[in-house]
Image (cartoon, rainbow, N blue to C red; front, side):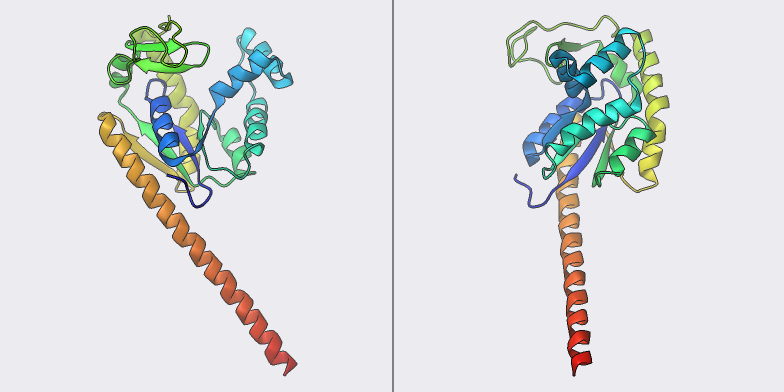
Length: 245
């Protein structure tokens, strides 16, 4: 489906929520550009750009990449697709990043994938990765076409050494502490749309229906604003003619 207007959305979800898979389906269904902060970070580090070298230095020292650096990375890329519809994945992760985004672009909606932590723990033990691209597979609900091999390159898949129950619990807690303020930030702006992912097929159909309804609402809002602007111009013209007479 090709969109008739620019549509911009953010998708959020904890590690193992299926965010990558859901994002891929949404992007394919609606023709959106997919902006993944993780993909951009890896690409810049590999290309040894100025930002890439700075981020690699932080990572090598075990430090978090500063908010302003991540914001520069994402916003620079977004300017290259300024007039496109997009789905933003992995950004913003802090209120500061959300504010940086809002200063430049208006986000139409925020999709929050709500998955029970116990489900995530079970899911991550079945997760396989293609490290060069960041593509993620799951034996239970998103298996590779050929077991153990990446669908695109045919290269071997691996399992992360930190996909253990203890480590996953710590990562989920860290995610919650970091992103809860961001969700609260968007709730104040009536943006988040939570979706429970216990039944994956169901949530994908719900998301598709939601985006259709959101686009219809935005189109109606656009038409309303255009009518209001036209009325304003007609009233202004009418006053001008009346004053001349």
